[in-house]
Amino acid sequence: MGHKDFIPRKDADFDSFYFKLVNHVLDNYVKWGHIPAEDIEQLEKEHSDWSSKYKESLPPHSKKVTEEKNNTRKDVERALRVFINRYLRWATPVTDPERKYMGVRNKKTIHTPQPSPTTKP
Image (cartoon, rainbow, N blue to C red; front, side, top):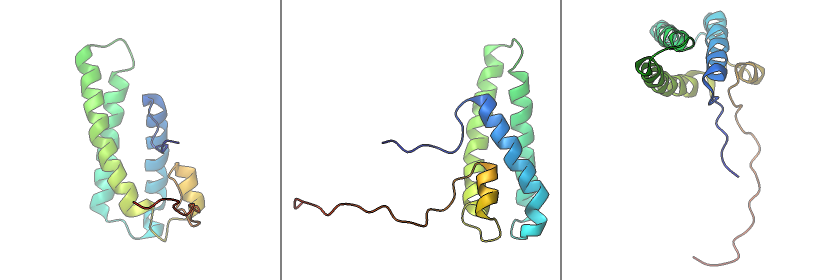
């Protein structure tokens, strides 16, 4: 069974996921107290970049607009993963219900049992 990514593949789903996550972070980062202001500013800038490129690609558009949107998505998705792993996934002030609301996978607290090996390597 393959590993299911928590970041949606479809652009429309990604846009909704990203919007919800950024707004929740903006509403709560002061309360959490562990995210530096410059990282919040960077998150907002990256979201703004994505949002503008995505909106440009919605009406009939050129191949160049789609390429720019796709390149922007690659960049912001990479940065978003770093932000999530650094500040949301493992951080104590962020609760499991908040992670679930934002669409971020919760920490796994129960190990899946593995069968004992039956052969030697």
